[in-house]
Image (tube, rainbow over all chains, first blue to last red; front, side, top):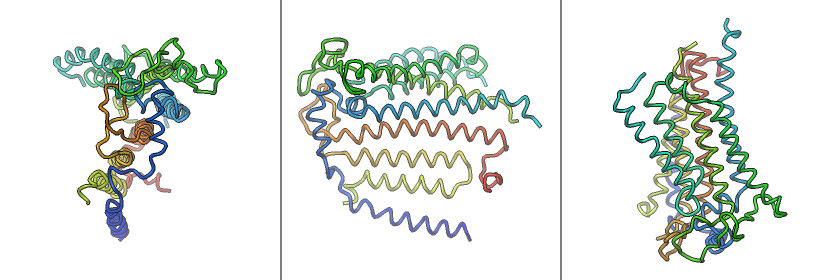
Length: 94
Length: 155
Length: 115
């Protein structure tokens, strides 16, 4: 019963989602002011040919700093998980 | 689990080539598609190849986890240091002070499409290399930990 | 019209597959695969939002003189991909820890997670 309800809700949601491509137009973004500015002035401002890299590392440097910290935290989490498991096994056995 | 000799020899031949390609993607991040994250992921693929081809006991003697962890921390510190470089010069944090300055990576670029010069883009290649080092160490140590965890018996 | 919007149709298909996997499957590894497929759908949506008709990649190295696609969605997609890798590594470590502790990764079996 519960599974049937979940499947029914999921089917209704999927059918609603299928109508989204009818309302969007591919290849014609609505607001392009910021990106036009970046493409026009990014090469001279950051002195880099690759506009995406100059956005990632120059215009949005704080974004990338947070991204690096997220990666660092994930690695620290993985390391702590397995390291604590290995050392705790001797005195945690029941 | 030990792979055959063909797989191990192939991994030994491919390992330096993958690392060189990854370093190329990292260093040319401001000229061609790529950058620190992508190149670091490519180099970590080499670590995954070696981990799959050889058994875990062989690799555990060769790789020091503390070294990889220190490499990752060094990458993040280098990245933050490249940001603080702007503060030292009296500019805002993460300011691109090396661009168009004539110093390291300091040549100006001609406007419009051009062949590209490696000695441009200011602080961006420094950050690319820092992030590449960090992602290399981080993904490699994640792979080493996952392999070492799946090898043992269930407790 | 629908054929012209083919990337958005692909986004919808990927979203349905991903969320269906998350909702209807019992195995933890399959649920994590659903999360990864959902991430791919989001990344494809971001990149295809920034496409301009007949555009080239926003890189000036030996570029032909044509209109360029929007660079900001690509930069944000890069952030999204890296964070997806980090969360996937954490999720897989959780799966290994759960398998070592309980001997199973079927969520119907893990009663203690439900309460």
